Image (cartoon, rainbow over all chains, first blue to last red; front, side):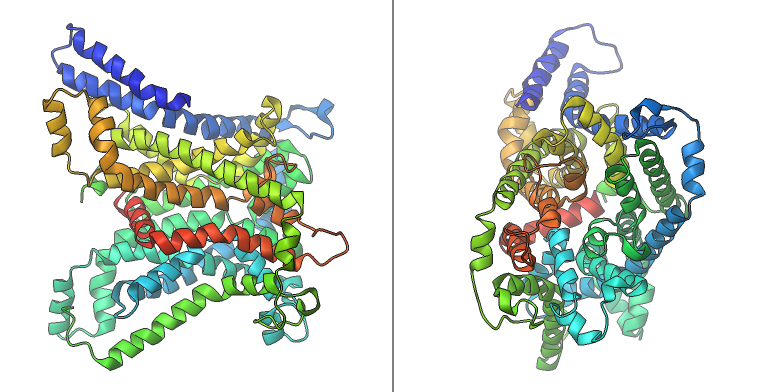
Length: 320
Length: 279
């Protein structure tokens, strides 16, 4: 593999840097070698990430300004912001946008509550802690399509245990609102454990002494939770919510399997995908890609600037 | 525990809560397993537990090239992507955790951006780029995006692990005359192995799970992975209800996941929490 070659290459460059004795007064030779090694070690990861995301997103912006339909390649031409006008004035786009927002907000809210409960259980349970943690990881790790198929069959009339149990007369996956709630239920099942793990890491930061002190001062369990635990956990909660909100906004797999976007249950991701695969319209598809990218950026901006979510991985965050 | 006396009452209450969690997590999985063992006659009886058991669905799917080839694709693509992402991630995470160099924050910021990046935004441009480069419907065509989106995960998780390593040993090696690169290979790499292994599991799960890229950037069994194949699978004969066979295929690709979770639960929990929160 070519990638591994860069370590020895980095070493020789670093050695050259140390042997060449002309250094600037500010940096010691060792420091310079360290800088070189650092850059060489990061370069491959950096270039892969830029090449596979940076270039395509720029290309996508360029495509979004073209009339570009693979079925009529001869008609490709620069049309400015016409594609944006077409998408933003289209009711299907706004329906998908509303659906996506609804699924995002409702599922993240439910996941947060259930995730907090699960985190407390995993953190505090007196019996079978290992077992609970192991089993709770299964929804996180299982392939989303497999989980979605399980729910799909469960809600299929005759075949499924849930369809027969709850709705004797109808097929819930053929109606809009039941479908949306089944999608949300599938999302919640799959991602609650991940939310719980992030929250559990925050729970571990709550000092036991503080809880004991509060309890001696006569705080009830609920007061200890809201007045002591939640404030200490706030950074972890915000990070968990940020990650899950962005993730939920990208919802695709569950919808694809459960309804394939029928009855206005498609998300914006489904719309972009359908425009590519069914419509072969690269111009419109790219416009949607850019709009989704902008929406995600706005959500992240709101979390980081308005709620003050600490960006994970920032240097001081790591050395707590 | 310092939580006061542990009464039997409290224990049984926790036991009850535990059981609710177990049911919540396991029922959907057991349901697919149950469907995969049902005979054709009992497939639509709606029973949670099969009335008649059969291995026929498993025998059927392993006779279709559609499933076998996509299983090979899934395994090959996930392993290659994992190896490359973990090697690149290890190099970058070592630099981030240990070295002082300009541009460190740029890489950390870029990783964070990509972790939040809406993958669907890449589907249209990548489709066209890969078509032009001849990468569409090939292994590298999927491996490249998988590496890209696995890198932030592996950089975060690994740099968190690397911060916990006793670095005096590295200094000692340097005093004995090792270059920084030698110290990395001979001293730190063995110490870092558990963290690297944990990261590899997380990255593998991510690649194994992907559906969006798998259906957008492939068109035949040359590179289609199992999650994508599942959504197109029509059964070994066109006129059959494929439910049992789809379930059997779903169970097959769930087996490695269950194995990882059973044997490496502690590692996965440690990896996910350290990477995402302590960063």
